[in-house]
Image (cartoon, rainbow, N blue to C red; front, side, top):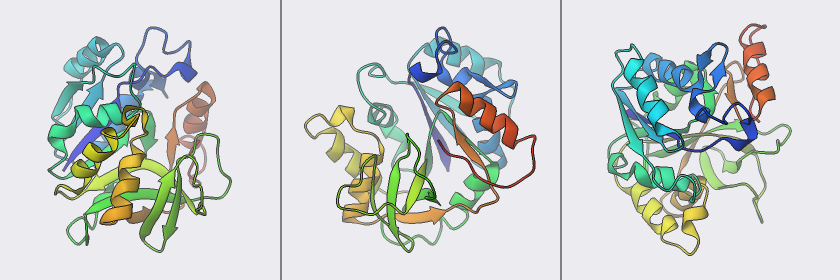
Length: 250
């Protein structure tokens, strides 16, 4: 099982922090977002990580080269990072999508327990073997990727669920236990008109509508945080020095 970390974007909402620094190297609690992610990936027992870079990728390469860790890492370039949406980074990593993987956004911090929970039952998944990690929706946030789930089945996912009732929010963590379902759906979605501007969750939606996607809900005592704005950095730091409890998405 490898982690695929989508870290190609500019992160304009974090300006001026990203004026000369890629978003994944922005400091949170004195450490780069990418280091938080790679440490959680290692703690969860992954065999390695693939990082998809774009904006100022030379800095990401230098950071990985200087990093001291037993976790093997590979850096892949997304040449379409400034023109395509997040699906472009998934396309750049397509060579890794037939084997087991866990795909995550490069701006989201997870407690390692979330990654371990996502992988815990990977040998018993029915159907496509594709899972989406979700959290019960209490108050919708501005940037939420909404999900309708029926039991442990994902029904629909998207920024706007027309004709569907949002029950959860996505953590942006997608797990595949292997096989071609996710890769086939990626080829179909990116090949559609304006497909390069799709969010990569559109791939999950297509798998859900065909062979099915399993929903995995995180427990209430684990924490995660999407780092979109400077205030998100403060939220993560507060959560990790304050009392335990409560997850936070943006």
